[in-house]
Image (tube, rainbow, N blue to C red; front, side):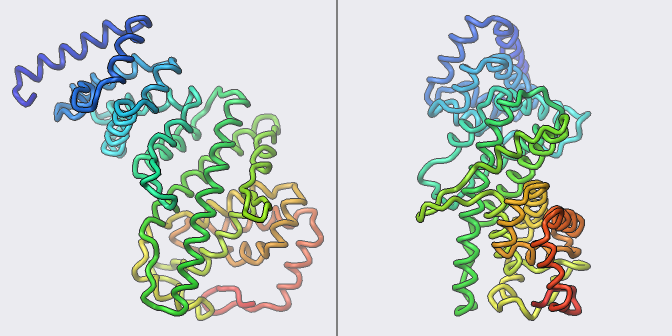
Length: 392
């Protein structure tokens, strides 16, 4: 492939095949079915995507897009068939990650747009959940989000930020899956953080699970995608159907009780408030009330894995508690008001955290005398330390 004559010939063959398949459904079905049943070592699409020649790679992506575009059956094979489809999906996601920051006007940027279009088609056909589950295997373990799943979530988040003609039913399907995913990830992260804080209270050498930052990053992406869906739905003539759907999703615990999105978001924020210091002028804010375990871990924690998590969780809580006394009361009962008040601060790891926390606090207090009474009580019984931390 590295020889220029062979490279030119290869480009021509791929482009010709792509042209033959365009708008020819019967041929596309036959060819795609064959490609998706080939073993990895014989799959020509995988070899073409691995070509160092950008034009060959781009032409291959165009061929794939022509085959799967608007076809649920062929797209389903792409994201679920083993081993060819899933391996091809991973190769495409690797290309997305490689080209993610390419300027739009460059050849690399154009190649990224074609690759993104393949996954946008997957999302539009309601196959995100199938793709997500195919990118994970039991060997990965519960506390694991694979790199390919993270890239897929980034693409979905970007997709949901764009104007869309999705039906309410399609949006509801995506929302329900994202809400269930968020609950599972948040519950996993909460338990891992709590276990670490308990262990580190007695052992300053206690280690945080190295897989946790990837889980937290996935929570951030899922939260941003949820917020985009919820706000888009609410902006359409005041339609709050999606928000009502989100509130109904529950994670069942062993005792039969169900945890909502707002419940788990508040619980996770409590653990994060103990674990992560605020960043002011590039340095962690000192807080004598924080346990030694949290303070000792600050130097070794990876800040990139925990960026934006507080801000986005607070934003989600603010959306869910708006004009809903039941949710407002539930947050108060979990001592969430104190947590939100403590987040009304500047934190460079969480841009605009204070603004989102203040808006969430406003929604918690609106038309809720009981919540207002909690804040009034705090006005007279609490103090703030020199670093701006709430001292109960």
